[in-house]
Image (tube, rainbow, N blue to C red):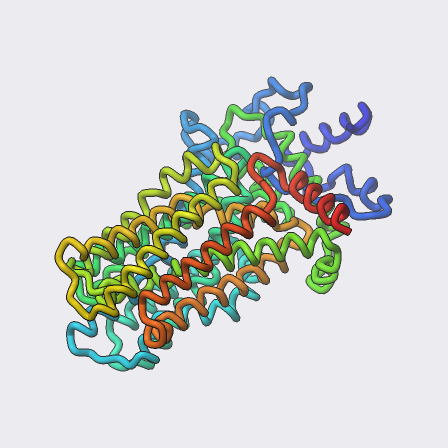
Length: 538
């Protein structure tokens, strides 16, 4: 608690900043922070802030009386009738356009490779593997620096540049006359996907309040799956070239929307753009909400970062502490078991999978069913993610995926040994099993995994930690994508699904025994719990 004199001083400084009388951030915590013997815990912006934290002295104050008329007019596009939840949702959806682009990048090989094979355009197994997996292989390298690029340029500029580059790559693929042109285009798409992934992971967590954080991250997952669904739908009627041209044309509207996108208040504060901070907070929270407490939180966070912000080498040294090391290891293991379910192989080889399993149904329509089974559960996930414990939802969904993949693997192994064609009604078994797998992944495994990662990663090592996690995530996806075709040749498609089932079962054991519960807890509470657990173990 601040004493009365300090609180009054902070209030006067806040009014100066809001009224535009201060040229730079002059947080009153600066002198206090300099006298501290040890760095304080960073307070994440908007994540731990609730209405209960507001100052009673200014609780009933009107933002319109505090803000200059220029600021109010600049936020006239934000209708007063829109609640803070929908304001944050709209900005998350606009940012999620980058996730939709990622979905198209990952899902395009699923329909393009099958169409090229139908048109007698033969590609070797190695060429097929590299065309499908190149974006993730590139991400292994680019993810290490993507976070620095986004921090330097900002979300809006990064999304604008990546969208222009992606439009160019789709034209390259549509006009390609050789495999090397396709490969170069996929390399560029891997760079775009890496940058967009950082944006869509970090931005929703920075602009959303704690009670809606899980929903906003779930929206991002839904946008990725929507991109995959649109790709499967386009593959029904369009050739790979026309589909690529269509994707290039659909990138024009997002470029217009990115112009109206707001940078996160924390990013603006690190660049001393005080007027933009106020405008963004009003846009996110509404004209009727008192933003002074949150503005004070921005000042405190930036003050702490400027005084005690560790460099990259110092952040790496922090991982020697048990609490930080445990957090990053848990984040990496969550993503490892997420990918070992085989979801990436199902995503990029969807049509090919149904051809391999001998289904009597149209494989392109089966891909559409899979896309819908992946996209529609995201809406159910928004409801469950803030009502059920994270560990319960994640372990339950992993159990369902383990059972469905085991049934599919045993069925395909028995059928392949019999060397008989599937009877018509038995052709539904692969579709049903893969649909159940996809439903379980879309409801819990996909959105919950990223939510837990965001909540476990300490703010003091967020920059270097995000790079490490993205590199590991890209490695896991690359391994799954590169090994699937060759694994099918060695152990058969049934054996591959059985292996994915066993990995999912191991994931259940990990979640139940090692993963802490993060639902409804602030970042500070989570880190305190992890530190206590490490102390008790030692």
